[in-house]
Length: 362
Image (cartoon, rainbow, N blue to C red; front, top):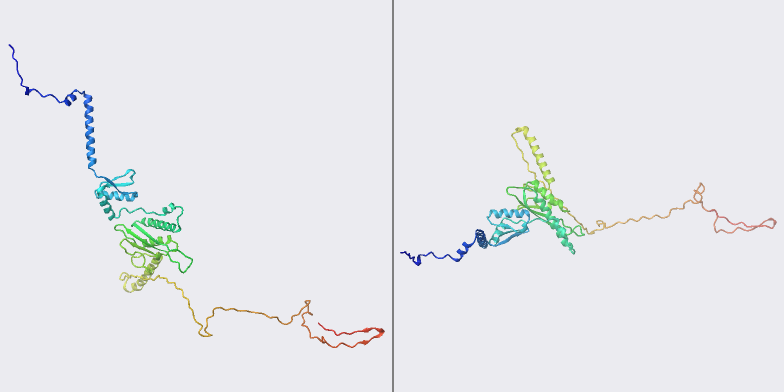
């Protein structure tokens, strides 16, 4: 007798899916390659999602000098603004939604400052350039070179130079003198002493033909005049001619020494102090005057021109002839008249006739 067990249909294990049967049918190498493919696909999807979420990059500034680029990058780091460089480092890129905000914030701090161009402008002269354009490029180049030199001073952070070069004409009285203005921005906590200001003034004046130190004005970023006033009088805190400043200092030291020499024997060496401030006027004035006086009377008439003519006439008769004692004697008066009566004829012997004529001594 045999026993047969009956198994219900709902208790049988379900059939495996088709992809599971295919995966089970693969060998170990095929399963490994399939797993690497799935991993790469997931990586591509994740990268795409991340790139899609990032903001678009736009150019903040391009064609910057190394100095301006470094200052801008340092400021972007301080403001926690992400940035990157374009290919070749010719531009700085920031997120597009922050371009205008970053530009305004950098502009409030004076960035970018821009590079100073000197006589490089003269290298790009093109054919057909007018004389006015050549003069303008020369003036801009000279301003740039002076700006570079002034910025090399340790206390000066930035500087700007403005030159006024008038056109010269053939009339000497109508010629105008050139002038210049210098605006300097000092570094934090730095100042310029009188010698440095005088050096800047003489640097600019010596670089332009015909310019005098009194025609140069130096200002700081607050609008304060650092150089001499127009009358040329040096004062406290002002620059100017180094020779004039030295002359004023010598006068002050001389009078201080004289005061001490007078008072120290009376009150004691350590009981007196003397300080002298000399106010010296170095102004120079040139004037031209023309006077016109009418001829009121004959005696007070103004002589416009005078001409002297000298003439010499013939003198008395001078001796003539061969040099000697006889010729040096003056001629004597004639003894016989030139036009006298003829002498009568007298008969002579031998039938000869003699004629006697009057003679004239010469």
